[in-house]
Amino acid sequence: MSTTGPSAPGLADLARAMADDSRATMLLALLDGRAWTTGELGTAAGIARPTATEHVNRLLAAGLVEERRQGRHRYVRIADPDVAHAVESLSALAAQRGLVRPAASALRAQRADAALREARTCYRHLAGRLGVALADALHAQRLVGPAWEVTRTGEEWLEAHGIDPGRPRRGVLVQPCLDWTERRDHARGPLAEALLTHLLAVGALAKTTTPRQLRVDLTVPVWDELGIA
Image 1 (tube, rainbow, N blue to C red):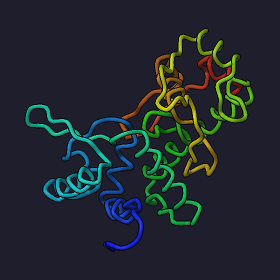
Image 2: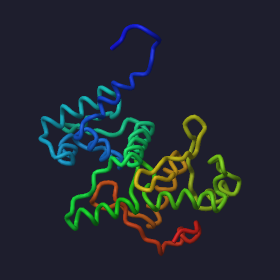
Image 3: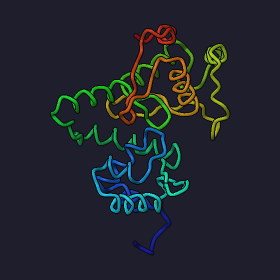
């Protein structure tokens, strides 16, 4: 590292922490918002537990994940929404550059890939085709304005449905997040997180045994209210 010239962000250091297939796989798995054990992350990445521990330690040192120990177990999760956004944004950039590895040819893998493209969690908000459709609906129904500000109509709709996004960090309730499969924006931020929680609570979405994958029930009335079919 050069010791001359002005100070600069350690972009190369951060990039090196991500620049490994196993660590990248771990970060993508952690976008489901849950806390994972090192063993579970190793299984997701297809590596042995001792190797997984080394990779997790590298991610911890870079501040990309945080850990919590409970008894003999060590749980790891994405450090914060900014890290999740960075991982999703880099995934979108890779897709734009054609750097996408296709799903395995097995029918089960193809079905899982299609389901993830339809609806998945991106940290704590909705992504995939349905996530983009939700972002479009927020604008079409004038719940969110052109600058992604929550409108008065949006405030009334949220209150009517008992949805409370709480007090946002930095005063921002909702922002665009480029979806790597759709290459268009879905919504992120406290409002998007509260909407995902609501959609899960009313049965419009349901988690599955596959990490990040969501099952969709379009018969639930909230989809009609939003103009999503």
